[in-house]
Amino acid sequence: MKILLLQIDKTQDSYLTNGIEIYTKRLKNYCSFEIQTINVPKTVRQRTQPEQKQEEAKLILLNILPEDQLILLDEKGKEYSSLDFSNFIAQKQNASVKRLIFLIGGPFGFSDVIYKRANLKISLSQMTFSHQMVRLFFVEQLYRAFTILKGEKYHHE
Image: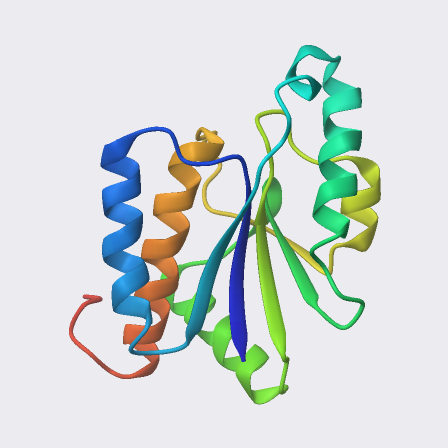
């Protein structure tokens, strides 16, 4: 199974980029993992929020195949403990999902088109985080999930 983290616009802060790189390198030992960034033209950022989400949706859909499983990282999504999330990953592996895409939207969330295409919404917390910080939190949780599945000592219960 290939796992893709699809994100809108590049990560701006170096401390986040450095953390993301650490976990991305670690994940290479467990799965085929890639981060893909969709760059939104600056002219789009001058439009209204609904227009921005609509333009982002067009760009997102160009990167998703019909057979892909699309999981939105969304504050209104289902919450998992780290153990439950590792079980979720294992279920997707056992179901022979070819490509599992986790999507982090832009600063205003997703358009209705993207919500309709999604297979599931996951929330990392009831708190709201910037879409930039969610990237690091998610990659760490994905790494944690694989270490749980392998019975390694990274996660403590």
